Image (cartoon, rainbow, N blue to C red; front, side):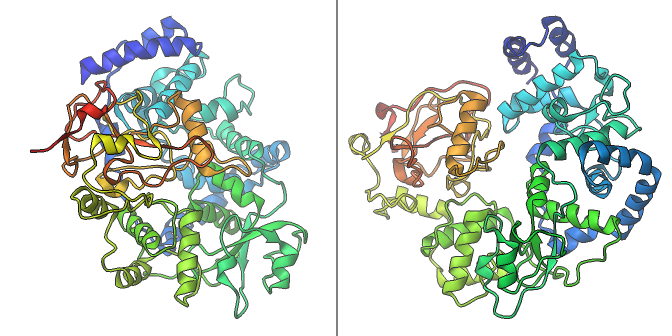
Length: 549
């Protein structure tokens, strides 16, 4: 791995110089740098937590955290008042972020940031993202802001009291104490707390406005109206019997009703500032915890209804199965990636309505069990692909394209869309550049699409956002995506070992992802099973399709 790492560092040097990193600094920092296997191990083996929201809130908004947070509010009262005056963010909100991110500075991370980022940029997942963060970290060192050995953070490179990534530090860190540098790493939290406030301010925090709050839903309320992105004016919600959590909210304020634990738990009316919290961390549960912790620090009581204990939540694989079965039953979830998003919630609501259930869009084990009873032969996408590859199926289960298996090269050539077989960046390391729609998890992959990191612009198709980000971040043609395949033993063809790309339409891999805003194409997958990482592969050609046996 060492020789391969040094080869990668040599290539990185040119890219760093193009980003205005001085060659002398790059050489000094990178000369003795070694990859950190522990970092890769942490990325590969992140524990999949299935905490119910009840249990999560018990941890994040605990009595101890509230008590400590109030003590910090008193200790730093004067500082927080100055920060609020400058950035317009409530002290309780700032301290809530501080408390959740690092336990009020107690756990800021012990990993050397640049070696950790270099490790992930060389051999981890989302390499292009981490390379950008590595170059941002080098820029921080180049500016003389901090000594290299003092630049510590999490295994993923998040730094300081507020766990800023290096790029966020460059964009949002402030020198509030006026000593000439923005120090988010030290024991003194002054600059870090001001930087958290600046981040929120720059992301659109509205001073004096609530993030949201608990509401009571009237009898007969249509739960299908709930969910982020389904905003109505406060006056319209009031007409439906749902009154805002505080009377000071203007009647024309847009708001959504959120059921983070389903219809059995607390109902929340959330406003603009809730979405600002989501820009810091995209998990709804995190945003609810931040908002509620801030309220508790200010003296508000706990939620009246709370969240049900003992809720049986789904693992990522189980959510993939829910998505696959919903689509099989005609409730298209727009992909099976194992992540809960608005498309999956909408599909669940439609299914629940059709079943005469409360349409709260909540995914739990009872939902999965009901889907299994209704669709006992639905199987997973992997099962469907194996069936298709064995010749037992006549239709692609993802795109609906009628086809026979196995396909010949001549049949592939006659497909109504052109398979992408161009050159791609293939390291066979499981990297995924872009997110949202491929049904790859059940094809034996560890990871498939993820939502675009940069967010979705107003009115933009999420797939467009994903493709836009892919192009901006890596320069890779937007038609191409690579995933890690644990095995390719389902494939009815032997392929040369230097082949990386298989046409996505081939043998049921076409997932219905021909992009509706671009010339019809299908995405491609890199077969990584058993292939050494770090080498280049060529694209698949028709002549490579040699039937097995």
